[in-house]
Image (cartoon, rainbow, N blue to C red):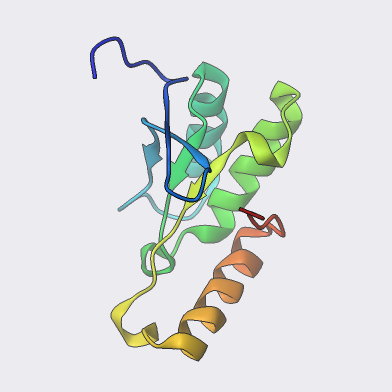
Length: 114
């Protein structure tokens, strides 16, 4: 694991490459500060953002990602977004619904095809 940097990636079992390092947004409130934090992180080379519906900040996370993509000449597939399903949403149908709700709040329509 020596020599890891912001561009280092690990290949998952499905072939998707996931960045080793990411920006976590737990306890960061919805708002401009979060948008700007994401913009800065992406500008500095972060390519992974970790969030969850329970954090209550997905609107700002999505806005930050969209603005960072535009500012840095990146495409949506350049950013790896991780989210989590809350305990109350476990189960096949409820997990799919929670996934769609998170995508909608994030304003992201990109889905991995791997």
